[in-house]
Image (cartoon, rainbow, N blue to C red; front, side):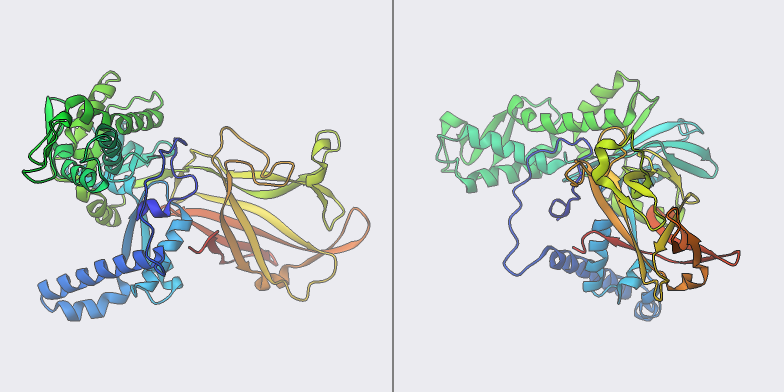
Length: 499
């Protein structure tokens, strides 16, 4: 399901493996229906369990149901578009009655942040978690591996801050299954057991047992896939069992493990990281643990594993996060900015003549990318970015209508001052992140009349957009001044696609 709803820039290493062959949905069934059905099932079974196992459970649930907060845990690389999709799924599932209610009752946390709460709750940290200590958390799941770097700011109370933007890589356990499938298909190309059904059964046998216990010490690995009459000695198949060598099984892990190591190394960037907390279902793999220990022991970094089963790290970690909120600052994964107009310089901007325009004040301007939040910026819940704007009118506006603005996300290399190329197409690495929309009618009293450079009268409205990140979600407010008094109003944040 997660691989069916990936953002356009999901893999932060920008070297995604070929997409997994996801079976198409039945005709008339859309991804929203799949997610809403799943959420409806989970919510319904939770309700039934609570009501059946708690004294007066039904009465308590009915009394508090409209106040229940649902925390959804998503991969590090997901953003506002996927959050909007999930709110719509919750609405369709009957968990909330409206999208405005979903804004209040549906909260989101990244898998990386949930995992750090789970890991610290089940790890002995007394000997190494001190103020200034830097550590990473790698959540290795079925389809994705999310890694985040934290610095401990305080022990009592425990306060953590993200050091840099987190890493996402498609290198979960399912990619090992796919690699083994390719190995088997090549190996059995000339065998009667190379048919899709037989290979699928071999992969299932591998996933159920061999993948979970393989640690590179086994000389041979046996996959049970058929009956006692299924034999092909030439291809090491005897009585429905195929024997694979250590090298063949190891090959299925190699690419995935290399991608995880590269992702974590990119995250660390030579910083003094002494501990990597490894969680997630795939994180329990002895082979992965061994390879990560070999790769990072040279850096003086220890791989710390969790004593508790870590398949539930995201779910339990999300619940701990909601009550404890240990992480007080998070790093921006992209550079966020807006389309802004700067005065046109005939000498400097000659080749960008096509991007220029004349505003109502008679000033020639050039459209540029105005970076509001640089990539890697560490943002606290108290952080705010105030940007000043104005709207000009050639005639007195009887209706101000609504305000609309676009937030762009830049994931390319280095900095850029442009949104588009000379053909007016968005640069590679530049995308629309979300749109801001607000009602301008309350600003009528703040309209001022002015004289432009061309000597003509025009009317102008000044206003500010206040951006913030509360509980890791982008929020915005409209601000203006009326007779010296500061006023504020709501701003709607709309995904580029309603999914």
